[in-house]
Image 1: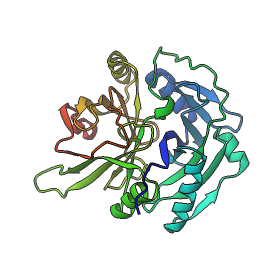
Image 2: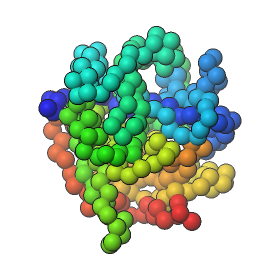
Image 3: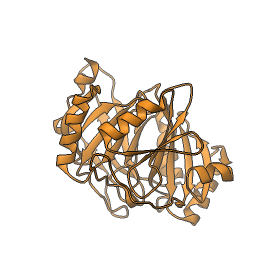
Length: 299
């Protein structure tokens, strides 16, 4: 049964596993414009705003996306989400106090979705709220809207959609039935918003991805900052995954580049903010109004 209101507000943070934290430090500070902080537990915090981190990079045996931090709208929504997940047959495990403290949240529970993606359901923010100073003068659009969005591999697709839409109550912002070529099968990509109103905090893509994420998005305050990041990507020899362009569904002007975690980051400006109670699902006919040549990622 669908929820009357989203239990999830936004994507609070993401967790990345890495064999080379130094590579992430250089990439974050020299290309993305984030601050990098060595945490006491040996992880690397990538800071984008007053929150202690928006991306946490943990040492590991692989280079991949590890988890999505889904922020509950409030305490009642956190409890309702845990109950709804259990009722839907999704195993939910309470996070330890140590893990909650490390993630700078009041409460934490974790679960794995039907496609095998790991999630940390969290409540609140216990960060020190220190000012963010970008080493490159970048301002990110975060706050109540979270870190940005994540696009998750979602096979099987129907159980994934049911989890995020019906169990967690996220609203369906947009439906895109993508056909890469005239003889290619259709790939469903559905975009879901939380209570914050960012056009989508989570998108579900009907495709596999061994890195655990198709891409995640970070948004900046001006189009100029997008262009400057594009120049930095090229100057540092980072692999471009899609040229600059403007998406049809959320109007984001952006480009895509590879990360040290083997998934892409969309770096953009101007994404739509929707009104969750009144937004009507749109049906996208094309990836972009202009630009976004993804063929560059295969060269």
